[in-house]
Length: 300
Image (cartoon, rainbow, N blue to C red):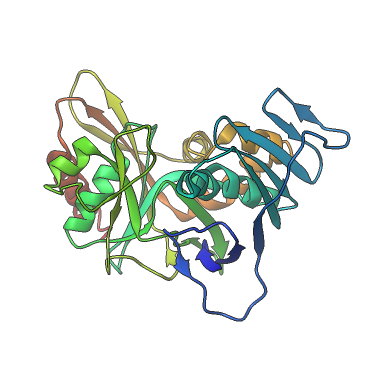
């Protein structure tokens, strides 16, 4: 089956049901198939009990899910554990594994959510639990469209930063869905072990790359007031580096200094703001604050 992700064509014999189908006739950029995978890389540069990396391949084992081998950013072999569900394999394929393939292609990705209102495109970043996915969902309820959830591929073309679409779903915890008054009855669980679901956004999804304008980094704090500051210079690059998706893999799969070089090209193209969010500030208040920030600074 052929799918679209990050403007790439992916051919997979493992169902990737979240993705849109690719109806083009172009050759696939990445092939995914089930095959046996052994820890047998020649001359590994890095290795541990659960991964190996050499100059053009890496192998990683996700306990109780599968062993994956990614070759030159073009082919992914999947060796599943017995009786593992394809949806759980797909969860890792669409996250860590495909992000690693992009890194092999020389592309770095951000751990972020991207939304757009057709005149302005916004990235929401922050550590897991900062509330970026819930904020993205709240902004979609305000009329924004989803571009990407969790994994954002950013590139520079014609002197403009662009973000590429993933799939029309956001992963949300039960508590976030309760806030959105969204029952979970018809939603697909992310996996069997956690209380998290794929929330479909329907037609509120951008199927084309969008020019990127603003990044907001959210930092939870236990006390204080809601504060916002605009980052400048090297602080912008540092923000992008610390929000790189699976930075521990990026450091292994890319050459030393690649992160600095890549993000130093992206940073000047964006306005980057850091918001300190005390735990007493709820999602409605954060949404209103972000909407006001964009309006006050002529970013809508």
